[in-house]
Image (tube, rainbow, N blue to C red; front, side, top):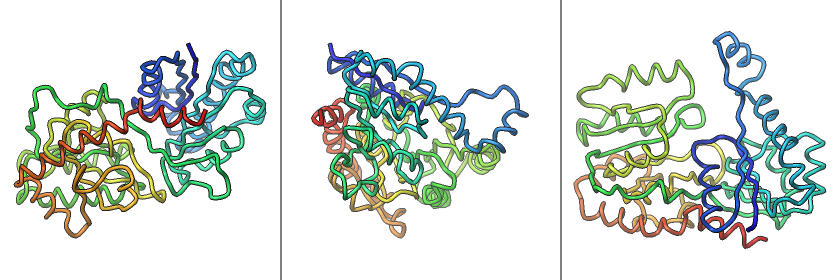
Amino acid sequence: MRKVSIIGPRVGNIPQSIADAFRRIGWEAMLYEYSPPSRQNLVRVAYDRIHDPFYRKATAHAFNSLLRDHIVSQLRMKQIDLLLILKGDCIEADNRDALFRAKVPIITWAIDSLSRAEYTKSYEEISKHVFYIDAGDISDNTTNNSWLPLGFDDLIYKPNEEKLKDIDILLIGKLGYRYKRREMYLRMLNEATSKISKNSYFIGSTGTLFGNASLYLSLGHRKGAGVKWLSRRIPAHQLASVIGRSKICINIHQDDGAMPVNPMFFAIPATATCQLAEAKPYLHKWLVPWMDYAECFDNNFLDVLSDLLVNNEKRQALACQGHESSRSHTFVRRLTNILEIL
């Protein structure tokens, strides 16, 4: 049995789902996840916010420690057949040298745009191939990189067995300075719910205590018209269930990056729910608009939303075809693309 070691940040269920996908195709998968250490008190949190904004140093230290303590020896002794690095981090010199000398193939999957993780670009020097989720990050002068968005876990994101659709509209995703357009769409929906649907919900977080408090005060207490805030975040299985209960799920991509594709672009239709996304031509490479999902512009967002709600046949046709097309974008299918490189 072939063996793979996977190292990546603790981001939702993504690393675990990729490891499970390897196991489903007959590999032995060892997963090493890293994250900054948990803070025990507010004083420590405040100190770290000043001296290590966004815990960048602590995260890089956790990543390099895992490499040094586990991965390097596996490579040196050829105990694995493949190393898959998810995103990576700023790599220290001794670890870089060990990976550069490795006789085991190394694949890097950049699960963020380079605008958020510039260091990932340097992984082209130590990797057999680098896959980017953002097409704008592809290098024209090298051949060992290509565009491959993340897939989804089809054991989690699937149609609800009871086929209940008791939520009209759901908008999901983080808010904050990289998601101003998503917040704009949320506000447009919030102001129009009395005309479109009072049965509208939001799952997401601003990433800050102050922002979440403001969001809770503006959305959390609503009992009549307006979007209702369900939660900051919920486990993947629960999120999949809520999406599956929705007639329409709105997916607005990040503001930064050039041509990023988020994994919910495939996970939403996998639940047999109609996806409404912004009109972005580069997305058409992966799913077909008005066959697999609905798309809109800023100036017709509410009109498209209203039409999808009242036109059951159109909405259900998009949900059905989207579900069928999503099967080409599972993590198991993505691994087929990755392993072809080997």
